[in-house]
Image (cartoon, rainbow, N blue to C red; front, side):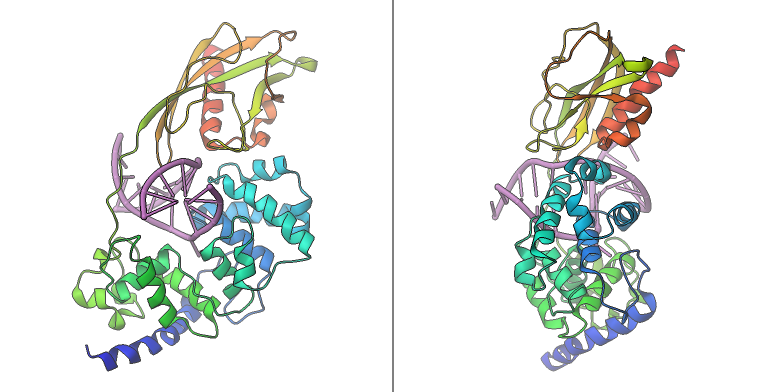
Length: 360
DNA sequence: AATACGTGGGA
DNA sequence: TTCCCAAGTAT
């Protein structure tokens, strides 16, 4: 391919991709049809934060719930931290929820979202990608939007063989050359849809790709070779213990002792069963928070990004006069689903309740 | 620059 | 079962 062919191909990429997007855009709750009215910045921001490292399928129900309960940024800003954290439970990466609250209150106090990429970038939880995405999608500004989909599509299109993360600079520069000055929001979303449905990590559907004849990786016959990724590290095995402490509360209600995890630790800011201080770096002490007659209730396995955990579960029942030291609250067992436990502790709670059924 | 940070689904 | 990976950000 000559240098001239290459330059012409760059200019044709955006029009071809946008034409493809006209008929192949995915229908998503936070998305309005291409060419439609300007999207609501609140919904754009909320969806982008939820979508950080998270699949579309996982985000959909959370996005619907959040927008139903909190239809605009002022409503979200007025909500309590606990309610927002509980609503986020199960979606993962909980620092996003802590930043979401802070960001909503900041934006609400400012009277609305700032409209430039630079200002958006200063908001908590808004990084390079999200700032560019909001600016392009909600405010119709030209911005170079690079997420993992774009990285993959562009690395293949230009056969960028340098391994990540070093390749990011070249990928960003190449993305810049093909991003149109108008419709850069549609362009970004089209790139992401292409990456999600055609230019997939494994078995890309090159025969259906609107950019196939401009793609250098395709020409080489080795599309899946790009982008080149570094070898992943092995994740350590950890062990910890969680404690199910039950009492018969007022009115003979079954209640369980829940704590709020500190913001500094894993699953920070979330309600949880008390545990023995396990971390991704070290096993827990095994020490219970109260002296009691503990009964084994099994264990749950849970995988994190950087550790695998086996969490043993111990149960006890306190009489009503007993107190548990430390900060926490008695929670009605019948309403446990409203507590907003992260998945690890939801699994443990399920185990504790299953052990009940075995007894009876 | 490298590491910490969740979860669920697909192969 | 195990591994990969998904619309990244903060430190």
